Amino acid sequence: MEPPLNDTIEAINRRAYDAMAKNEHFLTTPVLTSELSKPLEILDARGWLGGNIRGWKVLCLAAGGGRQGPLYAAAGAEVTVVDISPEVLENDRRVAAELGMNLRILNVSMVDLAPLHDEEFDLVAHPVSTCYVVDVASVFREVSRVLKPGGLYVSQHKQPVNLQASLRTINGYYTIETAIGDRTKGVAPGESSWLRESSTAEFAHSLETILGGICRSGMVIEDISEPDHAKANSAPDSMSHRSRFIPPYLRIKARKRGDAKPRSLILS
Image: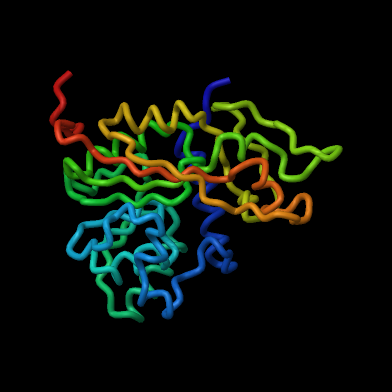
């Protein structure tokens, strides 16, 4: 069977996130006014950004919802927000209007950032979303193209085994249900939870695809973390219990090599 067409997958995920925004899903909740006084504490707990991004040009990639963009703007950055969901981006427009912020908002796909220029950004901030595309390499190529040499790519991904494993225990164990790198069927939709978005089309990408893909696109990985969501003595089948055995996310700090050339300058 041939891999699903990207536009079909995008349509499924666009509809899912449009509905989530309309229903005020927690993943589309705008920033709280109280959080704007400490944006980097929220965005960069590990200090990867060096404590000051004032004047940086930041791309919030697949990051609509009225949270990431306003937080980066509150930290002094010049912000562009990209997302495939028009309804999610309405949150950004509303929050920007309410706070008097100037956000550039684009309704385009992360696999094709044609409206953005080569070497335009100091930072690409990319929350969890690579699970929604079949060809992750296309995303990393676009990120590398729009980053300035030396620019940072800070991204978060669902761990491969997080998407492969059952959401609930079966005979006391979380079990592997989905093959890694399945480009035909993807992950079976699960109940809406902190770990799964029920109406989306997701794909479990291997670590080689994620980490190797970032490196092959002209970036160097400088640090990796696994955000800790585990809690001792938590109830089975809860996110905090499952996270004791399966870290749900992988957060990556990468930097574009100074000698990397944007795609439009590469001669074949």
